[in-house]
Image 1 (cartoon, helix red, strand yellow):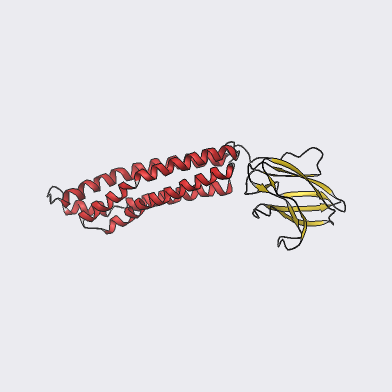
Image 2 (cartoon, rainbow, N blue to C red):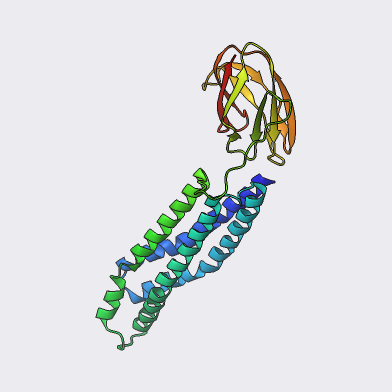
Length: 264
């Protein structure tokens, strides 16, 4: 189920980027416009996308919150940092953009109607404002930081990543909590004798396996475990390996991989 919540979260992000992209384009385009009627039209187009943007934010928040529970992320610092940055970016962009856009909308509408209450100088001044570029910078940097937090998942000393508890009686234990990485990523096993590898797949409804290869090229397989759907635990009987370093991975999700040292 975790993967579906991640999918919903990414779908919300995609919708947000499409809707907010309209406003972003308009914001960057406005400083190059001088026709009041054209400016008014662009502002109306931007305003029409706001509803879709907030709906998309709702979808991405629902997906992200539920994925936080199924992925066991709420005890980790990165997810709280991402939420704080998201809130700060939204507040900053609202404060920076609302007054500027409202003033420009009022002035451009008045000039389109032929009023002389607003001078051309006032109109030019607000169009030359650096506010659009500041808004773009805040949004881009904020999203980049949130993306970095989601990919690298730093703990900042608050909480810790999920741990793989050794299975009693197993020679080696490896765990999967999602389709991003095994835990641990470095294993030790006895050399010259077969051993038991217990695989704990806690990724609900998702198939994973553990396969051992001669090296990272994955050209020569030494052991390929059966696919197992989470959440479950399976015990693999691995044949004897010579002393040395080996590569292991999930054949379904090759990004989940690590090294296995056989020694004895």
